[in-house]
Length: 339
Length: 269
Image (cartoon, rainbow over all chains, first blue to last red; front, side, top):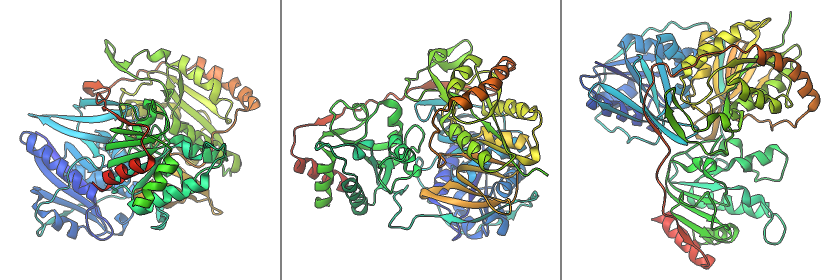
C-alpha cells in the first residue's frame, strides 16, 4: 500500500502557485486510482498556514509544515533537508511535487538521502490496482517512455501545464510542524534578475507561443538584412497579443558568434533540442526551418500554425495545422495593423 | 595555500541532435536503433559546462579542469577528437552504456566513484560541473546525486553564470520561472553547478590545445574501466516515438491581407 506525500513550496504572498495546485490535482487523482493509498501533504515556506488553509479540503490525512526564514529562499541545502524530513515523517513511498525550479533542484538529492529514486519532468501518472506507472519523455521530448519502479520512496516532479488546477474547498488546516536538521549553510539567495514588464518576452501563462526563427535575420529578397524591421514587427506583435516569445537555437547561437541578431533575444528564449519545451494552447512559428529535432520546441503546443516561404519545410509539414507560404515580414506587418 | 578551483565536469555522449532516433527493444533491453553507428557528440548542456569550466580555470589561477565521461570507449574517442581541440582538460573515462534508458542513480554512482579516484583532487576546492539535464535520459537527476555521494550540500541547477567575487565567494545565476534568474552567493567550494546554456560561445578549434589534450586522452581511454550501467529497478512498459501526424493545410498563393486576417481571427478565436 502506497503512502503518497504531496510537497509544495509556498509563494511569498502565502499562496500556492498554479503549478503547485496542478501537482495537487495529479496527486489526488493518483490517490483515487491507487488502491488503498494514503495521502499526506507537506508545505515549505516562511509561513505555511495560509497555504495549508487554502487546500484544507484536499482530504490529506495529515498536513505537515516546515517554516521560518530559512525556507523563504529557494536553496538546495535547506530545501533538500526539508523534503527529506517530510518524507521520513510521513513514511512516504511516493512523493509528488510540482516540477518547479525550486523542487527540481532538490528532489534527486533528497531521494539519495532517503535511499529511494527520483524522476523529474513526469508528464503523466496512472495506476492499475497497486501499480504506479509514469510517463517521461526521453531524448529531449523525442520519445515517450512509460515505466514503473519497485524502489521506494519514489520522488516524482510533475511538469507544469499538464494537469488541471485543483480547486477544492478552503478551511482551517491543522499543520503539524516538522523539525529539520539543517547542515551548515554556505549559500544565501541575494536577489533576482527579472526583466521589466515591458522587456519580458517569456510568459509561461500566455495563450500563444510566438516562435521566431533564424529567417528573420537572414538576407531578404532585396539582398539586405532587415533586423530593425524584424525587431519592430516581433515586439509589436508581442505587445499586441501578450504572447510568449520562443526562438530557435540557431538564432540565439548567432548572438554568441557575434553576428547581427534580434537584440531582445537571450538563451532563455531558446526552445527545442537544447532549450525549453513550453506548453501553450496555441503556437505561431515564423521563419523557422528544420526537421524533427528542431520541432521538439513546440511538441506540447496544441494548435500550431506556421509562416514560411518554403512549402516543404519540415518544421511545419505534418507538425503544424496550417502552413502559410508567405513572407513573414509582410504578413506580420499586416497582422499587427489588424490587431 | 592554493586558492584555485578543481573543476570536474561530468559529461555524457549523445547522438548528434540532427540524427533520426528510434527506440528498439532487444535481449539487452532498450536501446537506439543502430546506436553504435550514430554520429555522437558531447551532451550539449554539459558542453556548455565544459566551456564555462575552462573559462573559469583560465581566470582563476591554480585551477584545473577534469572531464569525466561515461560511454562506449569507441564513441568517447570519436567525440574527443573534436572536443580535445576546444579547451584544456584532463580526461577520466568510463567504458559503459551511454543511452538514455539507463538509470540516473546507477550512472551517478559510477561517476562519483570515478571522481573519488582522481589523483590529486582536492575536494575542498571542488566545483562539480555538468549539464542540468542530459539530452538523452533528460532525468535532471544525475548531477545532484553525484553531489550527494561526494557530500556536497551547496547545489545549483540551470546555471547561466558564475562570478568570483573579490572575497572569493561565488555569485551564481540560476534559471527560475518566467525568464528570470535567481542570484545566490555561495561563500566557498565545494559546490555543484548544473549548467544551462551559460553565456559563452563554442570555442574555435585550437590544434595546439588538441595536441596537449590528446597526450593524456589516449592513455585515459586505454585504461577506461568497463563499467556496467543498467536500468536498476526501472521496468519499461513501452517506449515509442510520437505518432501524431498532423494533416497540414497548405495556404499558398493567397494575398497577404487574407492570410493576416485568417491569423488574427484564429488568435481571437
